[in-house]
Length: 156
Image (cartoon, rainbow, N blue to C red; front, top):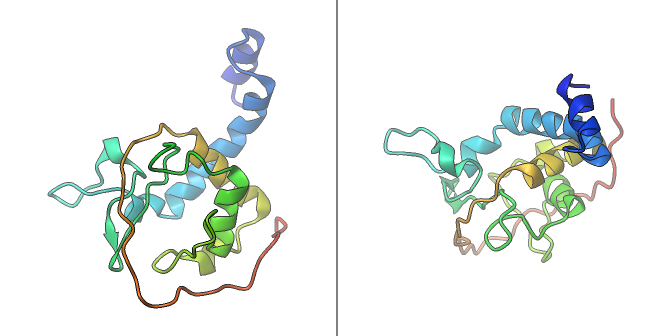
């Protein structure tokens, strides 16, 4: 446990559930970083560098499609999604409205994350600051892939 967590808990500045969730959020941050989410879901400046103030807010063209906002903004991002819905999208490529997520999103890779790791990613995405960035969905005419449903993946 991080050394500051017990002190913050004692002062009432951090709840027990937040204290217990902090390692999950840190793990989620790590997985989002190595999972290269920012590479696709963050807009770029004129020099091709991610715009730090728009981290994970979507709006970057990737594989012919515009990437969505992954921040917890209620109107333009994942704010209305539960952690379970984020895990479902990550693992099975299905949004809460039933629409399918298509490549270049690497569902084939993310679907093998353990339950704990998938939940950690969802917890992290729910913990970051919301950024209002409406991204228009790209109309497509080809069918999205359908993946065999994965309910649970135990830790290795």
